Length: 510
Image 1 (tube, one colour):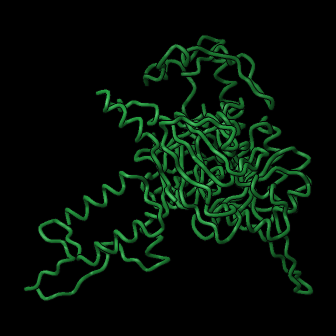
Image 2: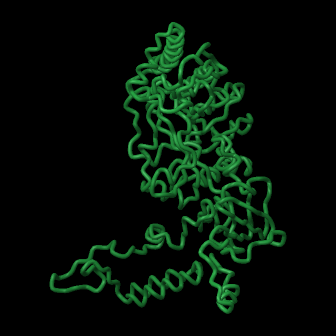
Image 3: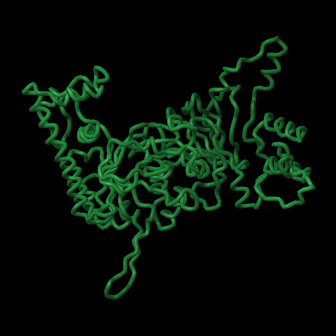
């Protein structure tokens, strides 16, 4: 079975006969075809012997192989033994950063872009476990955190990884280190009360032609373009400040402007609740500041006790990675277990799952655990695909396999919730970014295959073993070379004729 087959051999041969060589910009470079014995679209369809056509990174056609006309010159991935499934969506994570930037209480002027580390091992694991979309937000040890970002786990720079920049802000009702719940809420309320007072004072100053703030902005060079230089009326469903159109937006302090844009509904907000007692104050805060339409609750496992209040508010939730809440009766010492996702599912509250870690408890494991505790399979799969995509405002782009959506496809060895299934290949925007058959780390951990050069070799200084580096050149033994070639083709997943040529060149060179 071949993962990647090129059906252009005959046409290419014909072109040589006529003296015509295909250009590098042929359609095959922009289109790829994925074949699978089963396609789970997460859009209501379960296709047997299906085909997915991805053009310029987007799905251009999907359906039964008999009904889809595929381009003759496009490379083909997959085969009848694979199950195709949309890439998992991580609705909220603070992993992948080199530092959390949580020293100050209120930091909406910061951006996680400056902390995301593209070479962090977390992103490599995301490819391995099929997580193709991630919402990176700061942690919970803050009051108002910096600006988040939605990324994909591929790219050598943050810009390459970015799906949506400057996405959302994190607010925490749970007390950060050194604060009580009272002081935490006091700081939060004071922050937004001060925002209203500052804006009101700026309007009064503009009315009296004493626009000190504008002159200060000019002195600091903050009046950058016509759009920011113009004033506009304040939007918002919670509260507004009349006359704000008299104040040029470039005059507003950059430490305050993100808060204003939050109240205006220009950004999504993620409100963390660390206990049931945080839920109602979080709802009240969101209502007071007009955030109900843009806010999502990020809840601790114990917050299921406030599910009725969440249901009444109409808000959605992102669940903590610990989905089993255990409570001990202080008198009888009897333990009561509550499987948290089931509570939200029964009450009809939209919820997204998060991974406990990127390996053993990734999103597929969390969804499988839900089914193991009796939840509906469709609801469990939706909680790691379509629901988090909707919560992030990306429901028209990721989370399901549909025409027009991003070409984020997983090729699995079996059912996505089967404990014996593996992510064999991960495709993002139509590009294969992970191949399990070439996963050196998996080979080492599962089969004990040592990567070349990873094992220290003890030898006499006068001897020069043939499998150590000499003059900067890694010289493997004949046995090692034979083993590598065998591993490359042991499972019959050689990519294409190009891979075979590469192996032959490697053997000749060695």
